[in-house]
Length: 99
Image (cartoon, rainbow, N blue to C red):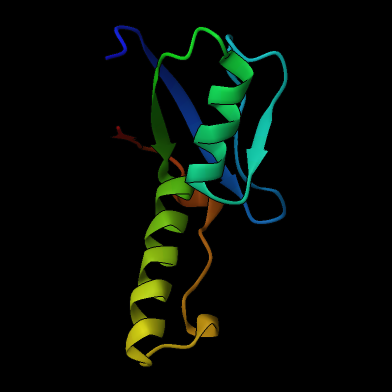
């Protein structure tokens, strides 16, 4: 089991996807999904490999929920992708922790 925790702030840009810039990272990390972002961060930190906790800001959280709604609705056949709105930058005020 990993002893060390690394908390990384994550935001979302519709043009780039999820991104983070951390003190421990040499360069910004960008990925289209949260899972991809986590894997890229882990790869950049090898061999240290701490437990990574993604701190989502409001934009990243809204995009995560939008994608979950799309996946649920598309499997049920009830919602088109155009009916789910992308995140609004004015809403980026709070942070939520996802482990």
